[in-house]
Length: 449
Image (cartoon, rainbow, N blue to C red):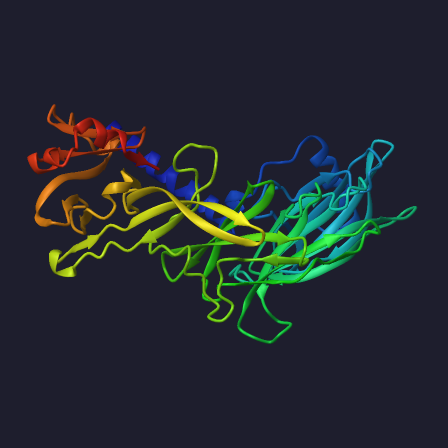
């Protein structure tokens, strides 16, 4: 038999045997992703932890979001200058609830000091925050009740430490749809902001509540709730700005499949209440900040202030569109002005936004009622028209990723704007030039994000 054929057969047999061995060794696909052997302090903590629970039939649990992403969390929980450790895990015999093992360092060794049941089947996040400024951090644990992760509970604790034992004193346990720490009363101490269903009044309302820690370490609701838009599917993110020395939270929320609003939240010191000035409590709707596309607040004009995107009606007649075309929304990027607890949106910048391809075209304010933009659903080409002549294109633009470009896609009669991932380019017509557009000013006003 040919030596080459013999060699190929030998290689095939060896490969088959190795696959059989691997299949026997790996009973669970998750074992392939088992973390590497721990070293340093984590290895010492793991050894003390395993000795205390007296079994290897467990799985470590890792926070899903936030800055803490390890199952071995070290932090000075009692302000004594040395770290304590929390280990999040599940016992194989009871895989429904995450447990918390508490350890302390004593004479250079880690010692088990307690073990407690958690509040859910997954640990979502672990945070520490000195909520009342006494030097001792509160422990904020976010839990998912089920594997779906759609139902959340926040539990807040402080460490109770005795001579040879430690435990977690629970200050608060609340279900929520959104949670974040924020200082809205400007006293340099964080409150906990929670958005949840209004269970107190047994209605379908969504409310935002603040919880504040007193000097005695108690954690209670701070002031009155703020009623929010109650037709929100989920919450995206929250950012805090300062308007006239007043902290204001911008909470972006998703409605339906892709439309969004921004809930504006501020603290009314006179009324001792959390206020959402743009939500109508009669209709339980925030229509003031609505946009039909998925856009979050950002600093659109690089002036150091966040703007809120709000959709502007363009009064485009659907008869001007062909089949397979859609109007690009015109967005007004607005800054917030305050008068007490009342708020107003002031339009600063206008832009047509192509969410599909991730860019926007900023227009002069005086053109906001003169232009319309149409996107082809098949090709992704966006064409701009004057409202007075919906048949004659002013200019068109299309987006391509850099890796898909075969060469120079533009010429001297075209405009283009690019970042390190994609390029937006197109052509200007004579009709566009008559309206005052140039390749240069089109390029300048394309923003890729």
